[in-house]
Length: 281
Image (cartoon, rainbow, N blue to C red; front, side, top):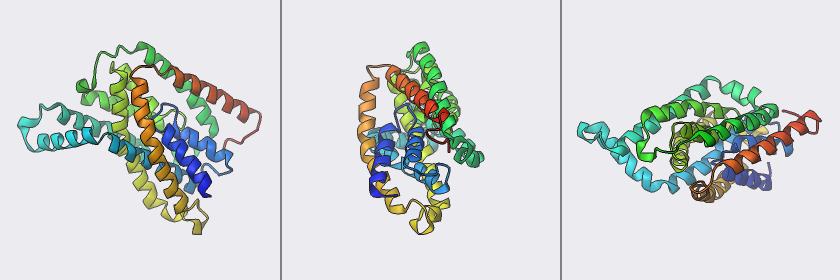
């Protein structure tokens, strides 16, 4: 992989990671258009690793919240009288909500990295999950806020987040839809989606970096570690601006623009696949 392609893929990852339009779906499509074998081990590892750039941008963006929640959670663990703290409960909620995707991701890793990488799955997921998002956006009462989030909310949202292992569904689209159906407001579910992304995506990065280290190396015919690092850095920079923009946008708008975009992209991709303009894998 050359540096230009790395920068392009990193920018796409950073911009799409937290938008409910599926970053993995976009990367899979673009990698195919650039001529890569999208189910190759080095490409699937590259796709997972560069997500950490956007996640690190989120960690910095949410640093004040994290600096408040982590100490409150630790105090609650050590001292029973500190367990009524809202931040203590929110910390446990994020931990519990992160467990399902870890279990499912490890159990079905081979299927996720091979069968589900087909562009037919990407196109279908883009279209079908748009219907779920539209229903959630319409049905949500938004009467609950971040301080109302419970472990039950995040456990349900965490289970739904597992569907994001299908490229095209979108991790943020899955978590936001589930949160809205739990009557949380859009800003609350968006921030919760950010928090749930941290353990899920950083865990995937560590796993892929260790298990696929040699496959990524250019010496072994992989995409190369230099392009991987460059793409990760670019996704960090672009992700920072995307997170900031999304929170401001979602505070005043519905998800309709993202739903429309998903439907159009999914339909175009299906036409290209049906007419053999591009191969599914």
